[in-house]
Image (cartoon, rainbow, N blue to C red; front, side, top):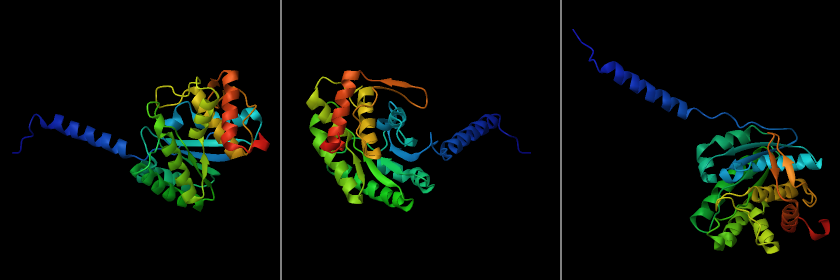
Length: 256
């Protein structure tokens, strides 16, 4: 007669537990919720998008100005480059759902070389899918770490080249950071040497507001409330400088 070893039930339960964890971790994530109504904007990126909720700040700026409403959704994962999102395949499925006005692509600072090459490849791949649903491709141009100021020029160029490849729009946030420091070098745009402070994220949202809605960001409020109820505040004097810097890289001088 076969006898079950005494240790078998414990081993079996451990195996079943591991299999359950694997099944849960491999289950496809839920679709990112779309918040609000109006022009639908889908953000694909990493922590430089979700820290301080840049999509929510953009939406709040439009709300506060009484402009056309914006609906936002975000698929942003820690340490992800765009090629990682492409490999996952989740972003493509969300794009294919359609109804988007804009799809915003973002990764970290991108120097020339292989990083620029993969940015261009991923942008071309995504742009083809974005075009199928009639949306516009935009690139959220990010900044290098605070200890790599010499990388601004190369990273800025990488985003501009990638956008030009597909006839896309650049949100020139890194250029706006430099324009801010030209006006006041003391303004703190970093929070930890990589991520933006609230002022840095507010500046990013100002640039996006100007490019998406075709309006000057000058005169927008310095304190905004996101749809989630979070209040973001920038000192009014600093906000005026940030607005002027954002306008300088997005708006024709006659329209400021």
